[in-house]
Length: 282
Image (tube, rainbow, N blue to C red; front, side, top):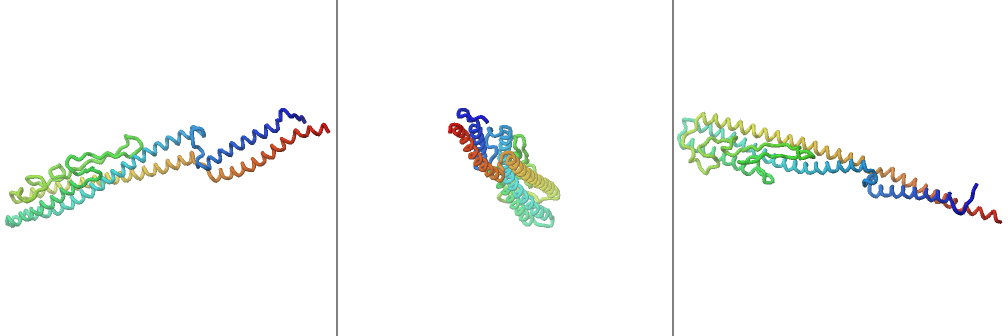
């Protein structure tokens, strides 16, 4: 065995081992403190880049989720109003049919047509007030609703506007002037079966409009469910990539503590070894 008070190889080896243990211990402490095994690009550049991209996608999905929540509110409001309009048209149809009875005197059929007009006015108020966040799919000149449903700008779902104002192409009361009206002055002649047939055609158009809005709402709800699932799955995936296993790291920290104690003892032994040389001079 060679002894030297200059090189002290055993001491240097013990010191290097202690430094390595301290670096490992510091890394484990950081993982436990942050909860992350990959907290920066210096930890693992490839994994960090993957997680960063996934986080960016989820941020975009969060924006899409906000857009979808607003879109669902707009369509739900329009659907509720359009269903109300359809119900009012059923009542209007009954009044119109009754007014075609040729056995009625003018005052009677005009009274029925007054009720018909008032019901139509209520339907028009529903169309005018079907706004959510200043968006109305039922008003005259209403624009189609484009809703973001994914993480990229091109992923959209369009809900078509349904103009349910009188004379707008879907709702048509069949009167000489468009509703709303304050009285029955626009009714100059007793309605006929042809008027009833035309109104029934408008009723069918409105029913189809309600159906389209219902389908649009269902599509939005399905897309929202999918989007929420994507966000949850992506979050879990990010966690698998970068989250620390705190239970394992805690056990590893305990083991490193024991190794550091052993390293200190090894360093003490290495420091005592050169003193053996003194025995040669006794």
